[in-house]
Length: 242
Image (cartoon, rainbow, N blue to C red; front, side, top):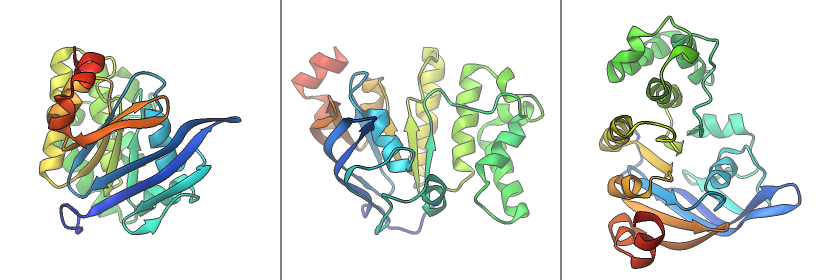
């Protein structure tokens, strides 16, 4: 899917501070993601997980620290420039454009790209990956079920052909059967070489499919390591997996 060899650092976040108003939410966090891997960030509400993604995406100003992507600094760039560089975020709550059709949502996912034929080919690829979206292609996106909307949100993100996909709470509000389906989709993307930074409150599921994991508390990374090791940490088990 991407030309960067697996195992090579794709995203390197160092000493990141960001927040809202006069208050910092992130207090000097470090996050590193390798090409072709899934890294997850787990933690309670208010830990700073979504803030981290917003800062990486350029939707929230970086107050201190650096964000390097694919060997170049991206902190300080505009959000659309960061998308063009290869980073796409699938936001919490999906945020699909409910009055527009499923197909129009997919087309908007490719708004930074050029070449209509290639975009149409990728829409067909999304329909092959998510057959229900083909069935619903002409319907208003708001008429889809929660699980279908999450599939649309992921497909829309993939339409940008990202090198790095940021997923914010993809299982939020879904029934257990749909949660398993969404996590299966995420795993399949990794098998195809897609790099993913996953923010997820369902810590057990996130750790089960991730290669590496970060645990955040109050805007700081308090534990990190291979996901299997993090999942066996007694403190993590007590706080998030019990």
